[in-house]
Each structure stands twice: as C-alpha cells, then as structure tokens.
Image (cartoon, rainbow, N blue to C red; front, top):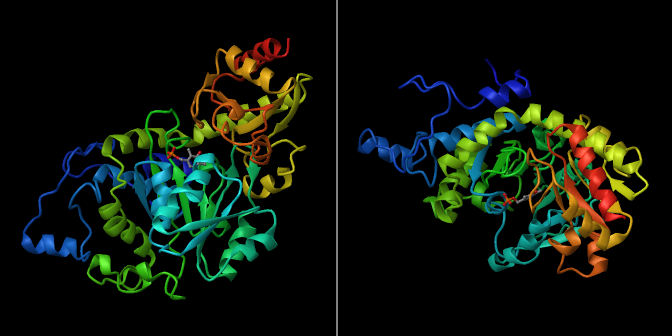
Length: 429
Ligand SMILES: *Cc1c(COP(=O)(O)O)cnc(C)c1O
C-alpha cells in the first residue's frame, strides 16, 4: 500500500499507523507514557544526535501523537507534520523556525479574529511583526514584502465572511520573493482543499474544528510540504545554518525535506513546549476517521441552508462562496471545487436587535464561540467576538452589526431549516 495512490477516505482511516507489533492492537493505542526506555547508552546518544529516529520524552514525540501527525501529513500531501496543543500554538510553531527579532510576516487582513490579535499584538513580544494586506490586491501583497519578510500567511476559506483566497496567486508571489507561503486550512480541511497542491509550503490547522469535528479537544497541526529550499538564501539560518540551539546542527543539510519537521520537534517543542497530549491526539484521530463523510454532509447542508436563507424575505444577504451571488463563487470553483465549506454570515432584516433575538430564539443551534462541530452553531459577532471594535472595523471584518455567523452541522437538513424558520419569525416579528 503506497500512501501516494490511496484516496483521502482511505488515508483518513489508515495513514500513519500499522497494527502495534507488540500487541496487534488494531486501533491506535493511547500511549500514556512520558518517557521511553533506551536500549543502551549508545542508543540514547544516537537518538539525541538525531542519527536514529525514536522516542525520548513526550514533550518531543509520543507514538499516539506521531500517528496523528503522520495521518494529517498524508491527508495534506506533506513530507512531515508536527502536532501542537491548539491551532494558535500551531501558528507560533509554524513561524518559529522562520522568524527572528526584526522579522515580519505578510498576512491577509481576512483572518480568524484570534489570529489577528496574535499577529498584531502578541508576536511583537518576540520582536516579530505582521503586515496586514488585502490578498485580492496582488500589488499590495508584493509591496508589503521587504527584506525582513520571512513568510506570507493566509486562510483557504476565511471566516466569518466565507471569503476564498486565491492560493495560486499567493504562492506565485511567495515563490518570486523566495518566501514560504503558510496557509491556515482549518475551515476547508484537506477534504475540500489541499493547499500544497496550490503551492503552499506549510499548512496549519486548528484540529479543534472540523478535524476532530465534535467539539471535544483543542489541537493544532503544522504540515510541511518538504519542498521549500531553505538554503536558497541566508534568510532562514535556524534551518539552513548551524543551529546554536541544537549543538550547531544544520537541519537542512542533515535532514533535507524533513528539516522543518525535525526542527519543530527538536527545538520548537523542546523549548516552547506547546505539545499535544496523547489523549487529545486520540480524540482527533477518532474524528479524522469520519472527516470525509462529515465534510460531505457539512457542505451539502450548508449549500441547502444558504440557498434557503438567500431566498427568504427576512434575510438581507448571505455570504456563502457556494452561491453564484458571492464574489468568491468563481474562485471557489478552482480552490474548493467540492464545496465552499459550511461557515458563512447571514444579514438579518432589523439589524442588531433582530440578530440578538434570532440567537436567543434558536433551539437546535447552539450559541457558542466555536465552529466546525457536528452540531449547528451560531454567534452574533458584533455583540461578542467583535464587540470591542468600532462599527466601521466590524463592517471591514465582515462582522457588521446586522450579521450572524453560522456553522452548519451534520443534522438533518429539514431540522436546521425549521429551527432557522422559527427563529427568524421570532426575530423579525
Ligand atoms: C479556531 C481557529 C484558530 C485557532 O485555533 P485554536 O485551536 O482555537 O487555538 C485558527 N484559525 C482558524 C481559522 C480557526 O478557526
């Protein structure tokens, strides 16, 4: 069985794990162990020198977590992956080997709200910075790049507006500038889009969302395509020059396409400690087994609900890239041809007050700050996640006072519609 020829549904169930040779366990066991006994002193030395791959300590690697990393790498078509404690941890881990004090990342202005905060505020404590640009303005993206830029960052399908990024165009700009393109593929998942096939260098995930799929654990993954030439310039010394944090090892010359993955484990996880735990990995592995089935239902339901809402007189508009009325529709056919995800915003007649009433009137939908759950979820950004912003900023972020964001679950479509129907009736009465 070569993983290269297997389909996604098969990889989702099989990739990254062979039955445990000691017990024959068919399912991936939860290796609840902090450390691993060395065969002898020489074995230990080889492991610490990265001359032999094996387990040392679970802050670095753990067999259950490794099975998940290998499975996500296979699903995304990458060379290697590293799992982290959350999606936000994955973003720091993706930037960590690339950045240094004074370096910047050019990031899309349409990103998950938490990422905007992480990039505009918190990373400054490391001496890093982000320059936000409208990724539809390719000249602005090029102009934002300077000699201290170390990566370009965007999302496949950006929330809350259901906007689709032209990954091919971003990859071309990154390529010409000799920079890696990092794509957050959380809301699309590899079922809808494999960013590496569009030229991405690194793919990051909040596994908290569709990957796990049922709102049980937080987790994150960074997948490396293994295709970027870290030695082509002197911009990436952690990967392509002797790394002082690892007794002078040059990761790129020693490990080739696995340089980024090994650096992320041997230095990133070792020193930042944003490790995923084996229980968490177990829940995410269980979720991924049904990823393709769930995504099929998510996008079927989302399309039907978006169409129903768009035709409803109580609704002023729906931002779903799967609707021909969306400005992202044409692009969605190229980037996410199977479907435009299951997350979009709805403008409700009556504005802010109607939105709040709608959220309070729904019975099947849960009012939560999450997305990508089997359950249908709703939130009114202007009164919650985007509350601190001025109205003008809310509108720019796709979170105007008159919109609610919904994440369509895998329930029976007629039940989702009937809940929205009664909710809209109460909200606009
Ligand atoms: C949720 C989310 C994140 C952050 O992930 P956590 O697991 O909550 O840390 C990042 N990007 C996107 C697109 C998300 O939806």
